Length: 410
Image 1 (spheres, helix red, strand yellow):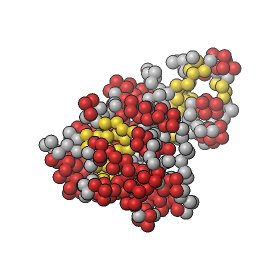
Image 2: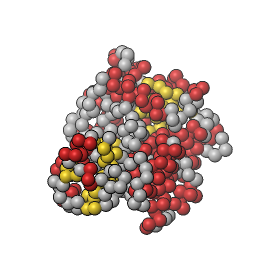
Image 3: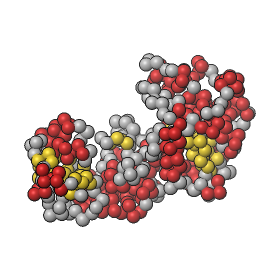
Image 4: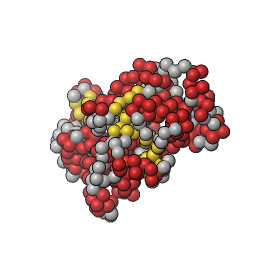
């Protein structure tokens, strides 16, 4: 290992907090380290929010270390109170297992699981059959309630009421680390910076029970300039599954991020050399759009492959260039009968998810935020038929400057 991956992660801006900085750096520089990151299986796809942690895992694996992707089949049944004002909805075992299977398939795009170069584990294997009294005797004795209540994740919930159900979460996550340490000699846990308290619990448990070194490292959380987590749109989360967020929509999300976030995202979410990251990040005014296009292309290439990234980029360029030669623009189709009868603009906006509700659509239209085939429309009750189609046989509806949707006859 010529370059220490710790230096790479540090330079690219991944690292927020460490339990033992110098020891972690030395360890990563001299031996193959098995580390883990947990993914609670609360949906059937990973999101753009997970992508930063996946990038960190890829950097670590490329440097010769071994990732464990721990699927939270057991912990998902409890729910992590971190950053939540309300208790999570409780899911069935079958739903959680389905979600875990989807995660495995997606993670296999990014990590090499062959010959145990990476490991996929599921904490349902050891959490679901725990004997509660034994668990308390073996694990519970090592946790101070006074200390736990000072953790940020619990403090946020104290005012509304923290259930004992969730209070167990830190013990379970710490137990995970201990089990992985015993099974795979896993000595390092990584996670988002909101996981700091839970990670400290696991590091402390291994050191107390096993008298062995264990380490924790937290990663930067991707936020916008107002400190809100990135990876959300009006339609909801930005998913890594192309069936839930198309490669074009995924590309457009990154193409349209704030100027001030371009350099940070290039550093964290692409493999471009840092000299190039800094050069692109320094571009100003109209030129920053070139940097955004590079960012969107590079991220889409990693997630969906080069072919889909190229198609998405060409689709975006053709829209901004005024030509429509692509099938990659988000599209809604109707029957010829529906268009013959006429479809009102509010329905088009809602069906194409350019508006969340009919009242939201009406407001956007009356405020002048909608164009149809490049003509501004402010009558919310305007009805469109096939007579209004452009030369390509479609309606191109644009909301604001950056949201497009195509409507065709199927």
